[in-house]
Image (cartoon, rainbow, N blue to C red; front, side, top):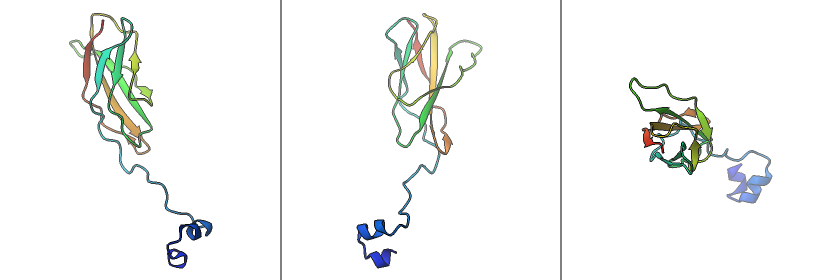
Length: 120
């Protein structure tokens, strides 16, 4: 078809043949970086921000209280935003850590490095 259309886009599009499929992610996402945990607006809250990635459907994150022995991670929470994710209620005066991973059509990437915060 390309030879007959002689490079004319309108001829190619009117042919009825499908054009190239849109690009899709071919691998799982990279590790999410620059994860930051900061105070939320209220006591007992933690705000989580991180660098966004392109071609990602959503992000998963989980948190836990920092203690010995290690506490189990929370259930996975999901978001489509890399900014202003609030985790609450948390126990004031305790350290918490959070981790994030990106998810696309090929699966989930590796968990990020943790970010730690003393909750006020």
